[in-house]
Image (cartoon, rainbow, N blue to C red; front, top):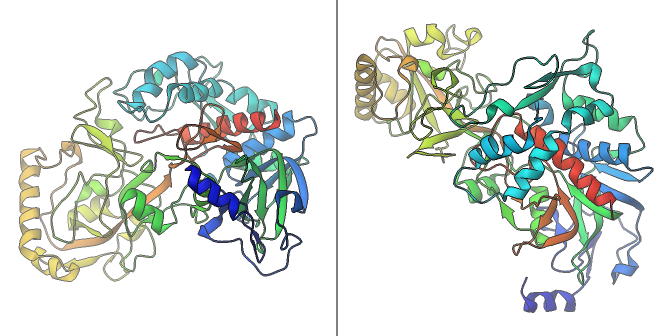
Amino acid sequence: MSDLNLTASRRNFIKAAGAALALGAGTAMLGGCSPKGGGSSSNDAATSVADIKWDDEYDVIVVGGGIAGLAAAATVASEGEGKKCLLLEKGENAGGNSFQSSGYCMWTNEAEKFLNSYILGLNGDSDCTPEDVMKAYCDGLTENVDWLKGLGAEPYMAVMGPGYEGAQSNQNPEYPEIDGAQYMGAIRFTGGEDKTGPKHIAMFLQQYVESTDVDYQKSTPMTALVQDPESGAILGVVAGEKGNKYYKANGGVIMCTGGFENDAEYLENYMGMQGVTPAAAQENTADGHRACAKAGAAMWHMKGGACFWMAPRNLENTEFTQTQPTGLTKEFGITVGVNGRRFYNDWDACAAGDVLEIGSDLRTNVGYRHGATQWGGRWVHLPLPPKAWFVYDAAGLAAGALPENLRENPDTTGWAYKADTIEELAALIDVPADELSKTVSTWNTFCDNGEDLAFYRPSNHMTKVAEGPFYATLCTPTMLNTDGGPVRDAEARILDPYGNPIENLYSAGEFGSIWGNMYQGTGNIGECVVFGRIAARNAMAK
């Protein structure tokens, strides 16, 4: 912030606006506006920080009740020795993508080896995530198993990975080309011997937090951060549907509000995407991003996440053929744009693990690894069009172009257009008939020769589109989560654009995640737990 802007903000310091208290230029109001009105507040007439009438006071306030927020709150409850914690969740239950995730949590017992091989290998040639942040992550992973056991999770846990007595087989590495995946393990929840216990880490953490003295308020969105205009320190939050509850945070506010999957403005501005259909939660609408941006936070990894796939949908664009990308469909046809042409490696539904050689050349391999794909030798997230068509023939349909329960008469049940010829199909989906015909002909030649010379789809995942009737299913870009958000340091502090921590403001989870383009499955949940603990411990140390 420039001296001129800071001076102006101090000069105009505090103007009452309904239930809002505009505390300087750094005060973050969600949605770019004041907290919601709808009722008078005891703070309407406040003219200084000293005039704020706090409705309650806590040692730590956690915003967002997904796995990261639950882990932070659980840390306060289990280690805080009576410290008072408020957990705010704007949804009706544990929020974000938590319950839509696999629930697998990364861990390792070889932090240094894992860091210096696989984790830094995933970082590639990017220096966007400092090594000390990655080191804090790997060090924290070594604690995950024992920490969960300490909360009482042992009867419900299955531990996979090297060096663990009785461990099940390890997870498959997402990038087998990179050395070091042998140091990776994962924790999953099974429900216990009788299967009646928690079967997901989010379920376990929520049950644990609800059994403690944490003030866990659901259906209670945070509507603003309260920031001291002189020091820049975060003092607390404004919360509630009416935006008229003021809660003080003596140790700090931990932001765990997830990504911006459901905010069209952020998706277009930061990822160049339109028409995206998130496959998971609906609560992640960049509330925390706007709040922290107004408080002066820098942003990073704004193009990172588990994204994007051109996912098959019904013709009304209201339902997926399946919610998670798998190898089920896209190998049995081709995907074309509205111009009738293929435009990317359209076998985009799995990680290519079945066709890779361990230690092979990452620059030439293909596949989608949580949405990242090889593009010119580098692994990136592609800006995909808002609409495309998955084209296949009768043999492709029978082989699995649609899930088994959708294959019977997909043209009359709303899952596909059907035509006797490619030209007739082109008319139905409004693409140039000559272009689609040429694309299909070229593709069939590739199949005959066993090599996709356009986008290098693996030969054992190539299927001709040759015998009518022909089908076309609508595809739109979909995603699981974004990872971009405020820059975080090794102590889970949120930083400004100059690398300085914003006092009393922390983050955890997918909200400003450590991951960039290349991501290993289980790593987000591992991060939620690790940085949830780090943030809570540092906030409690104040």
